[in-house]
Length: 146
Image 1 (cartoon, helix red, strand yellow):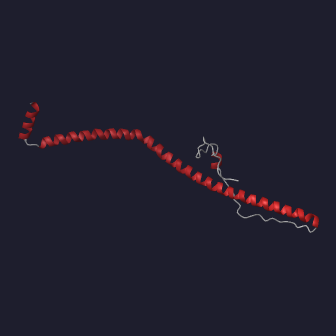
Image 2: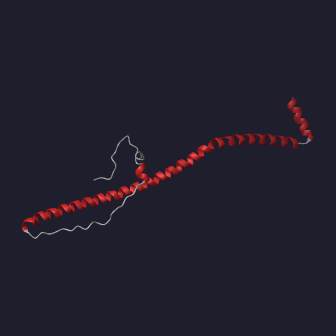
Image 3: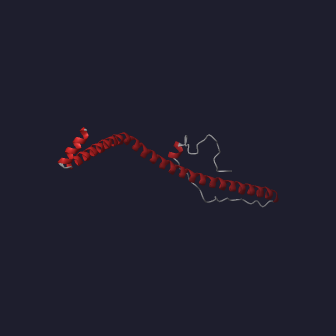
Protein backbone atom coordinates (compact mmCIF):
# COMPACT_ATOMS: atom_id res chain seq x y z
CA UNK A 1 0.00 0.00 0.00
CA UNK A 2 1.28 3.47 -0.80
CA UNK A 3 0.30 6.66 0.97
CA UNK A 4 1.30 8.79 -2.01
CA UNK A 5 -1.59 10.48 -3.86
CA UNK A 6 -2.43 9.35 -7.35
CA UNK A 7 -0.69 11.49 -9.92
CA UNK A 8 -2.96 13.38 -12.27
CA UNK A 9 -1.39 15.81 -14.71
CA UNK A 10 -4.39 18.15 -14.54
CA UNK A 11 -4.90 18.17 -10.77
CA UNK A 12 -3.62 20.87 -8.44
CA UNK A 13 -2.03 19.41 -5.28
CA UNK A 14 -3.41 22.32 -3.22
CA UNK A 15 -6.95 21.91 -4.58
CA UNK A 16 -9.14 21.03 -1.61
CA UNK A 17 -12.50 21.15 -3.38
CA UNK A 18 -14.97 18.80 -1.78
CA UNK A 19 -12.97 18.49 1.46
CA UNK A 20 -14.45 21.52 3.26
CA UNK A 21 -16.64 19.41 5.52
CA UNK A 22 -13.76 17.09 6.36
CA UNK A 23 -11.39 19.99 7.08
CA UNK A 24 -13.92 21.73 9.34
CA UNK A 25 -14.78 18.66 11.38
CA UNK A 26 -11.65 16.55 11.08
CA UNK A 27 -11.26 14.20 14.00
CA UNK A 28 -9.11 11.17 14.13
CA UNK A 29 -8.42 8.77 16.93
CA UNK A 30 -5.21 6.89 16.41
CA UNK A 31 -4.65 3.70 18.34
CA UNK A 32 -0.96 3.12 18.86
CA UNK A 33 -1.07 -0.05 20.96
CA UNK A 34 -1.69 -3.40 19.34
CA UNK A 35 -4.86 -5.17 20.48
CA UNK A 36 -4.51 -8.28 22.61
CA UNK A 37 -5.19 -11.37 20.61
CA UNK A 38 -6.33 -14.33 22.55
CA UNK A 39 -5.75 -17.57 20.77
CA UNK A 40 -7.37 -20.72 21.97
CA UNK A 41 -5.15 -23.73 21.54
CA UNK A 42 -6.93 -26.94 20.82
CA UNK A 43 -5.07 -29.96 22.00
CA UNK A 44 -6.37 -32.38 19.46
CA UNK A 45 -4.12 -33.31 16.54
CA UNK A 46 -6.78 -32.66 13.90
CA UNK A 47 -7.40 -29.03 14.88
CA UNK A 48 -3.71 -28.31 15.59
CA UNK A 49 -2.89 -27.75 11.87
CA UNK A 50 -5.88 -25.50 11.28
CA UNK A 51 -5.18 -23.45 14.45
CA UNK A 52 -1.64 -22.77 13.21
CA UNK A 53 -3.06 -21.56 9.90
CA UNK A 54 -5.58 -19.41 11.73
CA UNK A 55 -2.82 -17.97 13.92
CA UNK A 56 -0.73 -17.15 10.83
CA UNK A 57 -3.76 -15.55 9.20
CA UNK A 58 -4.48 -13.50 12.32
CA UNK A 59 -0.83 -12.38 12.52
CA UNK A 60 -0.92 -11.46 8.84
CA UNK A 61 -4.13 -9.47 9.35
CA UNK A 62 -2.58 -7.78 12.40
CA UNK A 63 0.47 -6.71 10.38
CA UNK A 64 -1.81 -5.30 7.67
CA UNK A 65 -3.83 -3.51 10.33
CA UNK A 66 -0.65 -1.98 11.76
CA UNK A 67 0.37 -0.82 8.27
CA UNK A 68 -3.05 0.76 7.79
CA UNK A 69 -2.71 2.42 11.19
CA UNK A 70 0.68 3.87 10.19
CA UNK A 71 -0.82 5.16 6.94
CA UNK A 72 -3.68 6.76 8.87
CA UNK A 73 -1.17 8.46 11.21
CA UNK A 74 0.80 9.76 8.21
CA UNK A 75 -2.39 10.94 6.50
CA UNK A 76 -3.42 12.71 9.70
CA UNK A 77 -0.04 14.45 9.86
CA UNK A 78 -0.33 15.56 6.25
CA UNK A 79 -3.90 16.74 6.80
CA UNK A 80 -2.80 18.80 9.79
CA UNK A 81 -0.02 20.36 7.72
CA UNK A 82 -2.44 21.12 4.90
CA UNK A 83 -4.91 22.67 7.35
CA UNK A 84 -2.15 24.82 8.83
CA UNK A 85 -1.02 25.97 5.39
CA UNK A 86 -4.62 26.69 4.42
CA UNK A 87 -4.94 28.92 7.49
CA UNK A 88 -1.76 30.79 6.52
CA UNK A 89 -3.02 31.29 2.97
CA UNK A 90 -6.35 32.52 4.31
CA UNK A 91 -4.55 35.10 6.50
CA UNK A 92 -2.51 36.26 3.51
CA UNK A 93 -5.66 36.58 1.41
CA UNK A 94 -7.36 38.63 4.12
CA UNK A 95 -4.36 40.97 4.39
CA UNK A 96 -4.24 41.45 0.62
CA UNK A 97 -7.97 42.14 0.52
CA UNK A 98 -7.50 44.89 3.09
CA UNK A 99 -4.73 46.45 0.99
CA UNK A 100 -6.90 46.27 -2.11
CA UNK A 101 -9.69 48.06 -0.27
CA UNK A 102 -7.24 50.81 0.80
CA UNK A 103 -5.71 51.22 -2.65
CA UNK A 104 -8.10 53.90 -4.02
CA UNK A 105 -7.64 56.04 -0.91
CA UNK A 106 -3.87 55.65 -1.19
CA UNK A 107 -3.96 56.71 -4.85
CA UNK A 108 -5.86 59.89 -3.86
CA UNK A 109 -3.30 60.61 -1.14
CA UNK A 110 -0.46 60.10 -3.63
CA UNK A 111 -2.05 62.62 -6.04
CA UNK A 112 -2.44 65.10 -3.17
CA UNK A 113 1.20 64.56 -2.22
CA UNK A 114 2.37 65.28 -5.77
CA UNK A 115 0.29 68.47 -5.80
CA UNK A 116 1.79 69.55 -2.45
CA UNK A 117 5.32 68.87 -3.71
CA UNK A 118 4.67 71.04 -6.78
CA UNK A 119 3.32 73.87 -4.59
CA UNK A 120 6.35 73.53 -2.31
CA UNK A 121 8.76 73.81 -5.23
CA UNK A 122 6.95 76.97 -6.45
CA UNK A 123 7.05 78.45 -2.93
CA UNK A 124 10.78 77.72 -2.62
CA UNK A 125 11.47 79.36 -5.99
CA UNK A 126 9.41 82.42 -5.01
CA UNK A 127 11.15 82.57 -1.64
CA UNK A 128 14.57 82.55 -3.28
CA UNK A 129 13.48 85.34 -5.64
CA UNK A 130 12.17 87.37 -2.69
CA UNK A 131 15.46 86.93 -0.83
CA UNK A 132 17.43 88.49 -3.67
CA UNK A 133 18.44 92.12 -3.31
CA UNK A 134 16.33 94.71 -5.12
CA UNK A 135 19.06 95.27 -7.71
CA UNK A 136 19.19 91.58 -8.61
CA UNK A 137 15.40 91.54 -8.85
CA UNK A 138 15.49 94.54 -11.17
CA UNK A 139 18.20 92.98 -13.35
CA UNK A 140 16.43 89.60 -13.52
CA UNK A 141 13.19 91.34 -14.50
CA UNK A 142 15.05 93.16 -17.30
CA UNK A 143 16.56 89.89 -18.51
CA UNK A 144 13.12 88.24 -18.63
CA UNK A 145 11.71 91.10 -20.73
CA UNK A 146 14.57 90.96 -23.20
